Length: 325
Ligand SMILES: C[S@@+](CC[C@H](N)C(=O)[O-])C[C@H]1O[C@@H](n2cnc3c(N)ncnc32)[C@H](O)[C@@H]1O
Image 1 (cartoon, rainbow, N blue to C red):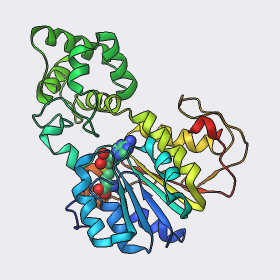
Image 2: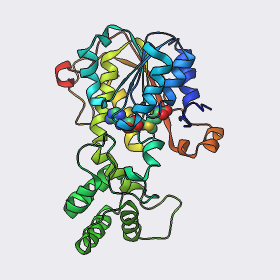
Image 3: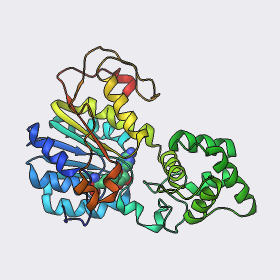
Image 4: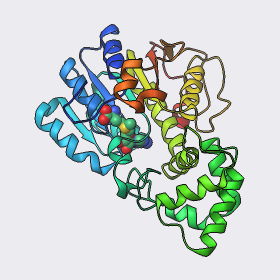
């Protein structure tokens, strides 16, 4: 376990093991989801690689500064979204270095989830915020202003919630009396809207996930991040993606299928047209790597994690470059 930042990174041993297996010992690794820096710190400790850490959340800066102090030139941090990495790497001299790994550990960090004021958790009483970047529209704005139809679409599309219409109707009914301002208030409205007894998984889970994904434009961002990995990883560099729910995992699988030159994307409107039948990635994990029982025991959050790994081939990008930009 990594105690450096009092955070337990998910599937970290498996990632380090694969870096070793694929001889990623130098060059640059992009940690696209820096969070509390658990992955970055372990990579800097266990390899001779440089790390470029990216995260859209301004609150992670203090953790990034600690690593900068410790590892100096071997570590650089950029407060940017996945969709800005391409521009960042192209603009600077950064792309001259060999990028040998790119890692995504999707979703929210413990830092975000456990801080009431960020409004991500349906278990803690906080304002309806949910913005990873602390910029743009808040959950409060959509919950109190969007029509029932629009809310239901979001809850269904991003949360796979079969009771999306009921949930949306209850939200609208409730806000007609008083604006909905807190996470606990919203969670209670959702629980009441969904029929049936209390379940093992909280009834508010799917709706909270959906709103968070919508607010943070997560599907678009993930597609953009994956395209960047295909563009910048050097030959034999590896892509590692840890996802936490089926929506994310499907996007990763779909992207890797498209990079096999076999199929066009059926689920993503964000992947640009394909111009080649070459395989730009070799899929290493036909089935995703799952956390061990020991890991789940230590860190319950890990239970739904899936790690997919792919290795960049020598072929150039399968995407139409201009459309990808
Ligand atoms: C699960 S945490 C990563 C934890 C990290 N691996 C660690 O060991 O501390 C995910 C992080 O990714 C960031 N993130 C999510 N989507 C992002 C995006 N589109 N662009 C940049 N950062 C993003 C979140 O702000 C969050 O800090």
